Image 1 (cartoon, rainbow, N blue to C red):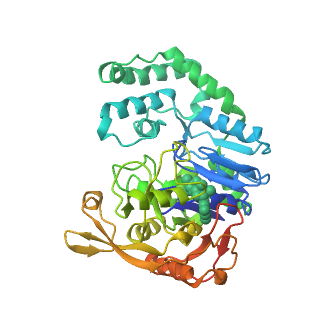
Image 2 (image 1 turned 90 degrees about the vertical axis):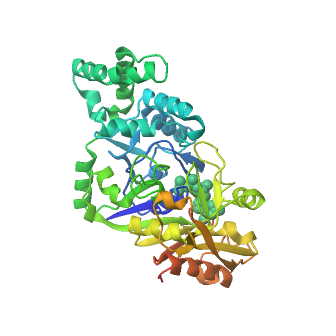
Image 3 (image 1 turned 45 degrees about the horizontal axis):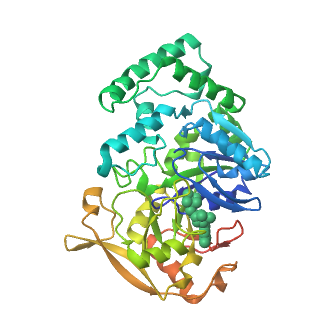
Length: 429
Ligand code: GDP
């Protein structure tokens, strides 16, 4: 059976923690999209880790961790990360890399940096990990697949020459930078070949067999619905689909195999990068939530950038869950809200004098003003509670209010960063 853990918001919802927790019951964990531009923070018995490329299952001895074909594979980052966890006494995980995954090249990172500099104030707030240039090349059919590392050297060099011809025009004439050289790119690819060779696998075929054997497979998404290139706040989105549906493509399995979609929603909002964020808050109110948020503050796991903060947004989250096809909602970081006397919840958007509950297309989002309902806070620490009934009544009311607004069942409530900080609920919307 296949399950997917995906984000219903802007990312940073706590997917890593939920994946790590569900990893206990999984045989295989697959990353199916995105690259090293975002990160998951995981706290377990080995310590606290920020993973960018490795699947969250790497901490378990019994799971196989897979980099699916949909991932933007930065090979040096992957192996640095692998070394980083092994150095901290985590046993060497069983890792497989899809032969169809494509490689993030050093020039993708370079182009990302150059383009952000060129756009200056109008930039997308890219993490400069090369993700947009990488996916552009993939779909322009000038990317390098892992499998191509093993092709005939002369053919590979010919391909490199073809690819860099185009790159060099841009480098020289748009960015006024040094051109790329075939030999250097070839050497770069050969160094990647050496690193990745022992892990290369026909992942789709491997998963096909695993499914026949009844194995439990967990698909791990990066970012969230609102960063999806089709359904998110385009163009302030990422360059690969963040939706569970894409999990089938990015892992190479039939879509009907995905039986459970766990949409992770954070009990308040945060976002990184530019773009409309209707329930955003500012000033001291935002600083306090940011500093108390997550595990040690809401700062980017990859970049350390302070995240933008806001109240829970039912309009965006309902849309986020719907596009993910949520069968379950994991409601995370609820413990953080225990300091508030009152908690505003965004229940509608006012656009040109009309209130809507539907998440609009980007051009209207800029004009949307949040409509809030104010719920009473519970004013105590709920960490350590394991039974839903033991939560303070006002806290349960918050959860149930949100669940009703979402129209999707909140079956898990996370009240701390650790693996065990979870409350399961059997009832739903
Ligand atoms: P991801 O990319 O969706 O995995 O999210 P991040 O790792 O960027 O952000 C989630 C942060 O919140 C991490 O630091 C987690 O350790 C932490 N976290 C996850 N769930 C909870 C929770 O229920 N309570 C608290 N306090 N922190 C949590």
